[in-house]
Structure formats: C-alpha cells, structure tokens
Length: 616
Image 1: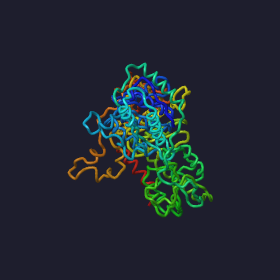
Image 2: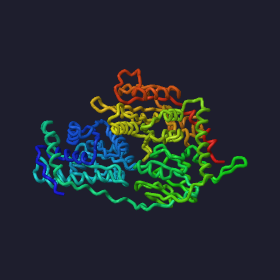
Image 3: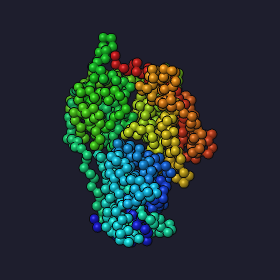
C-alpha cells in the first residue's frame, strides 16, 4: 500500500494521534473512552476533535480501571471495537482486569496506551514502566508505534509524517483492530503509542484543520485491510452427528456471536435444554438449573415408579460456567459430550469432549419418555425454589432477583453481577425471550460491574436511536460488587449521561455467596475459643452507607426492605424512567434501588432447596 505523506503544521506526535483516531473510526469505532493524562494529550485531543464534529462519541473517565470496564460494556453489547485511551505508567496496568475479561469473552476492547519513547524505559525517567506487553497472554495482539518517533527524530522531521511512517502506522493499527475483531479468536488488544515532545499544538484551531486534511488525504489513498490471523487451534468445520434417539441434554452458556447461538438453539429446539441466564436465547424445552444434580444419578425412584435420569449425550453450546452439577456431568466419561463453539475457546475442562465443532447434524428423534423425565426434573427444580422462597420469612437476595425477573419486559437489557446474582437469576428462570442478559463471566470477577453496566446502557440506547425513551437497562449486583466499582458512578457534568439505567443492589452486609459454599459450614464459623472466623474473613460486614454514597455522586436512591417495596420501586422507574427521590441533587441518568436483604435467610433457603433436589 502506497501511503501518502502528511504535510500538516503539527508535530509528529499530534499527527500520529490524528491518524490513529482516523483509522479507528474507519474500522467502525463510534464510542471512545478517554482517561486524562499528559503523555496521552495528543490522543485525547484527537478524540475530542472527532467527537466535536460528530464522527464518534467521547466519554471521559478519570479512573482507568473504570474506563476500561466501561469500554468493555460498550464493546460487549455493541460488538464494535471500543478504545480506551490513557497515559503511561500504572494507568495502563489498571486496565488488566478488563483486558482479562475482554479476551476470555472475545470482546473487542482496544487499550491505546500512550508512552514515553521506549529508549527512556529503565532510565529513571518519570512515569515510565515496561508497559509494552504488560497484559501478556490476556492481549490477543500487542503492537507499539515507537519507530515513528524514532524515524522522525533521526530525519529531523518536526511537522507532519513521512509517507513510509504513515503506511507503517496504518498497517499496525489495522492489524491490531483485525485481531480484536477476529471472528473466532478476537479479544482485548494493546496499541502502545510512544509520543515525543512537542505533544500539543500551539492552538486549538490548527487541530481541526489538520484533522480535516488528514481525513481527506487518507481517504484518497488506496486501502488494504489487515488480514485476520489464523485460528489458534483447529476445530472441525464439518457438522458432527448428534443422534437424538439417545438421551440428550443441551447445556448453553455464553456465546460471542448471539445470532449464531440462536441458530444453534433453534436447531436443538426439540431437545431439553438447560440454558444459563446469559445464553443467547430462551430454550423451547427449558430445564431448570435448580435440579441439575438429578441428572448426575442413574435413576430416580418414587414409590413404585422409577426413571432413568442420566443423559447418554450432552451437547454443550458456548461456555457454561455456573453450576457444579453441570461440571460433574461434563466430567462423566460415560456421557458423550459434543462441544459446539463459535470461537477458539473450547469448554472442555475435564478433557472428555468426544467432538468439538462449529456445527451439528441431527439424526433420530427424541424419546418421549426422556422428554417427560426432563420436564419433571425441571418442574422439581422450579418448585423447590418457589416453595423455599414462599416458606422463608426473610427477604433475601434470591427474593430480590426473582422480583427483578418478574418485572422484565421485552427489549430490556440486564447486567448481572458475576458471583451470586447470576446464579440467583438462573434460579429465577432466566434467560427470557426478548431480554438480553450479560455478565462478566469470562474470569467471573466482581470488579468493574457498574462500569460494564454503564457501557451496556449506552450501547443499548444507541441501538434504538429513534426511541422516545432509551430502552431500559437493569443491573443487579450484591453490595460487595457495587462497592468494588462505586467510582463508576462518578460521571462528570460535561459527559454524556446514561439514560434509563437502573441498578439494584442486594445489600446483605457482606459476602453472601460464602454462606452457600464450604467456608459457610457451621463447623467453620468460629475458632474453638469462640473468636470469629467466617464473619471476618468471608462474611466481611460493611459500614458503607449506600444511600449517602449515591447522594455524593448525584444519583437517586431508594431503599426497599421487602419484595413489595422493591417491586413497586422497579415499576415506578419503568413508568417514569427515574425514581422520585429525597436526593434533590440527583442529576444522573442512573438510579439505584438498595434491597436490604438477609444472609441468614439465604442459608436456610439454600438448605431447603438442596433437600428437594439432591439425589438420594
């Protein structure tokens, strides 16, 4: 590709930044996140200029960790590449958690890290670390543009960019974007941009003129798109045969291409299906996850009646991660497991998969008795959850999530906390048709959940630009998850505000999930001398006042102490698009409902459910 020389009256650093942003826009970037910094000033100015003329929407976040997760939410929902731009040093390191999640879920997150010239690393220069490749294997592609500044310095070029460096810059940016957007092996990428002084132009007027000239010059040049890399492993492209005459169970988790996932689920519509809340669609013959353990035993007897319950064959679609009984099933060497995947990330934890494929071919017909058994098991799981909730005098997080599930409408987007909440949503019956649910289950961390939800809300709203009111996004999470990312509520007054985002916090004063895990056993709650063990290191009680935190960020807040209050608050927000609040300073498009729930009650509910669905 013969690239043009750029004769513009700006420094090579500023010209580099303008070309980077031009290439990002050409690749489909419509949202960009900027974190303030000195070395990244040319990149920030370039994005601000593109935003000024309406070529993209800029969001400024003062915390790189929050900014990266916000960009992740935008990328996850829109499936478009989204850059987050920051200065050098620890600013870059703050993006690691979001990069981990992006690569594990194949979301096209682009970390554009400004840098000092690489020869300054290790010299004691201010704000320099070895940041190129800092994300290791969590970046599917890492490239640096250091040679541009070096070439300009050696040639004495103080304005514009020479043609060979423009070509190199374009090719590098396109390579990084192609890697992020790879159909089966995409994910987070790092574009490191070392910039030499002078960083900023003499005045703002020259920026617009230079940006227009660069856009026009590059638009006339021939374009050669980067070739996506080869898949990291070979997966059969030929359809694998699945004989439905065998006792077959389908298990669906998260997929990258939701349209592809829906096609596979449509193909398997006549097969009993256990779908996680973040599956691409609701199954035709749903199997409730609450009774998943019943499939791990050969048969279940009740009086004179007995039924074979262990499947002979399981079709795994995407990446299921939630339920221990499912993991046990997939590890059973006597069950044929076929994994159907749209990416190069294969869910085969136990190494027992008989086949890994992109497509399946169905033969045979499902046995009616097997269908009846699966329906009965599903009903058992759903009934166990319902009866346990109705029999509890406490208001628990499961009650709260069930209330949210009851309120969902066609067209809603739901962001679920990656720990207890997404599991509670499974018990509440998600996924629902017409509702897109997301959770950061790539690495299953609780960090960045509010930021991700804000990103999803923006992308969800952008998907329906002509709607009178932005479509609703609901985020549900526990108190620890909320407090972990509470800084995400800090959206400045000059920034675009998310519309119609409702956050529901289940506040059980600590780590509720541990009540249901091994550390929550009665024998481990205290030391022999009576001093606390569980409560201090797992329960982790809090002193935070969520209402006051919301007030400090200008976010409306409502407290709900029972299911009825919660349902009424959700309904009010659905009708009005906001919450009437005692917080008169609330200016954000975000509203928070705090559900004050019980941890002890949860422990009793879990016990009641297990007593019903545990095979004997």
